Image (cartoon, rainbow, N blue to C red; front, side, top):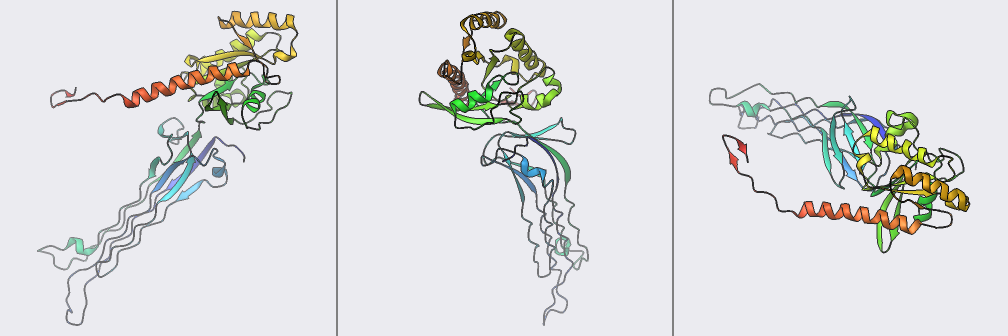
Length: 353
């Protein structure tokens, strides 16, 4: 399945059905009163979050979504049928933006979460609605209300517990393939990974979701190499695994480049817990390993371990460190959910207090 993390769609709800002008005519009632029914409500356009999808690729082939119109009212006080909702399914982690691409409408994070993007128009009143003591035979019926139309941007930000970051060809995909059943493309050249990948990791009886994003380059926060979109996929992660290529001549500069991009992007990425490893240590001799570890530790400010996805060295330590950070975040979230709500009292002079 091809991956797409951004799409623009047009949605239009259905107009309401028109009200009916009708009068009761029976064998013994030649001058029966009004009996025109109301029109039905137009269909709404609803976004539904589902865990069965992980890409927006379907919106590449269909961008226009229009709900049906409500049925018109009929005689004998028959109300027109309401039109069915038009449901658009999106993967969890999808954000909905206005056409300006800046105003957030909603963030879909839970299975079954529903957001009404365009409400259906109300049905028009039939003439029976306008019957009164002074107007016994009204000939007025209202048309149905128009539906709503809007353009909406969809942006997918993956819901992962931990994310792998680093420069291109730093060994991120190799690490994901070594610790999960994910099958990312692996090759010895930069930008092998072009789309984010997800894998479920099992460590010491615990499991969590690990995301591998394509390699970042200098200027990623400004969109270079689509870096701003890739960074969006790790915004929701509890912890970042920063892999620095041990075969780099200057691993300290590689580390500083990525840290600079995180800080420039914002959204709290630079403040997230981060675990840093020197990767591809199996390709280094003892002298190179010691020299580059020392240089990286000086840049990071604390001891750094070496890791090799090929030989397995340091892999379990990395996974345990990631799980501790993920578990800590989950515990904090549960504590917030279980905390008793503070009682608020409404004072008409000052509002809630």
